[in-house]
Length: 244
Image (cartoon, rainbow, N blue to C red; front, side, top):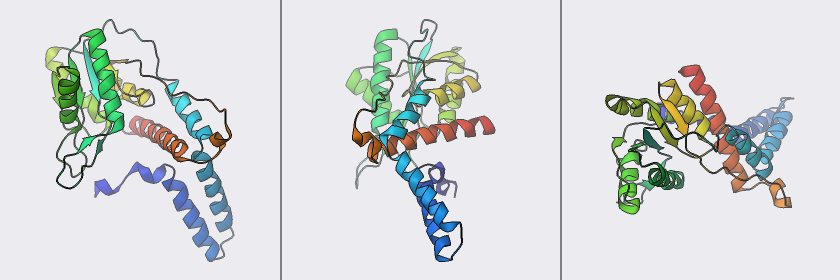
């Protein structure tokens, strides 16, 4: 039952589509607020689908992810999973593009710092292969990077931090380089700090934000994707602070 409940209901486009439908239903019942709800929700849906708003929200989040951090005291590198893609019939799951980016950054961090590497991430609901297992295989096979610790159970960023802290405790490691995208970094740093670790952000590239063409004011998949990501991070950060 818990898998049926998702924050996606609170994030564009779903939340505004539902409000449009509610507004239409109320309008059909001649409720005076129906047209207004449908109109406001439609305008919000349009706005969140534009690169203008989506890019702006991502930039505001990434501002809290420093590009220059002191990595000298770090004792280990932690690469966070970013999702899996469902494989076809009789095929295994494979790493989501976000996770592949983190694998590449993790390999870069290892080359630069020469610290032991941990990977964390569980399987998708109903899946068998974990993010961590596939990340470990990619780091070993494609980048010749050894992985020392593997957490195959974490389902959330908070669990990434909690389970990794338990794996690192016997080695007395408490200062770790966290590898993830810049838009995910603020929530990840909070989670790792909250479980007692001292997280150091890997300098993940920030997304460029510049409005220089008419298309930036028109709805499209990139704008909607950026808005979805931004709202997911904002809602997730607020939820973590309330729950933990």
